[in-house]
Image (tube, rainbow, N blue to C red; front, side, top):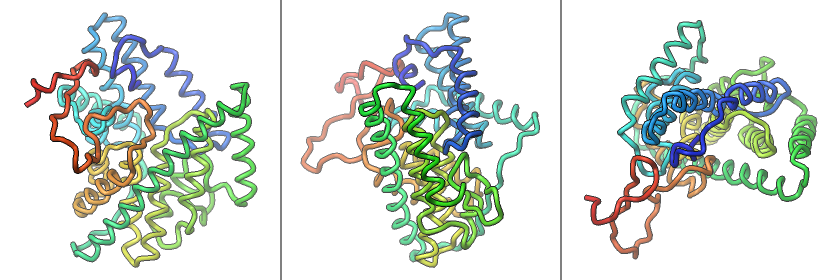
Length: 359
């Protein structure tokens, strides 16, 4: 999807939508630790490409239509249309938001969310109690953001490593998911419960660890975030289908629960901040994730959302879960680097604008 948006031409096959839907359902049904937003985004993009071919759109218009598919899929699956809009604009290139697609993406995301609501789809509610601003709490949020960023980096690095080495060490491609499935089964027996299988939004039993339970005291263990990270990295790294975002929510909420328990900060606040900040670091989309906090948890602690997401963004390093994501503006520039204007990218996603034309 992202490669096609950057450089239209190869095409996104129409059959991708039904195939990724079925394979994601199979992954969830048999216990794979994966999300659903990746599937939703691909389901949004595949018909967009199909319509583009039928209407014989130009490469620039095809790019816009694919971006609306990303926005629609993301906004609808979480019930966050504004976040879906900004995510589609922000995720393509680090440090750059493409405003030419703002209105189309907003329209697509809002209409997709309204369509889901019209069909009676309900999203999981999350609540954070209002907190007064304090510099002590702000310092705790900064430190937590650092930890969230490192967790994002660990997830991205481990996922890519498992994918790379599984292809290197296992000659036959069909044996890679077999090995991954056996490893997930072994880890489940090692832990002794099924808390880290499938989505993990809610638990199978009253004392199960889940995203929802992480917002309450005792709702997550000290290593719950690590186990979900490992399960998800193995699942996706060995070829099973789904998304990374919902597991990242689980990882962040569980890590926030642990950090709040250690520091004495409000558990629901840090769980909510981990929920959005680990995702921000892994996808390099701090603005979209800040808005997600507002849409999911309410606007009261918005300053903490922004601080946590941007801190995690910087401390997540240069890695990310999307290998096709490009770098428009580096996160860090060497102190002794000469001051040079950053090349802009053309609407088609290639051919940087010459520096002398950049204001």
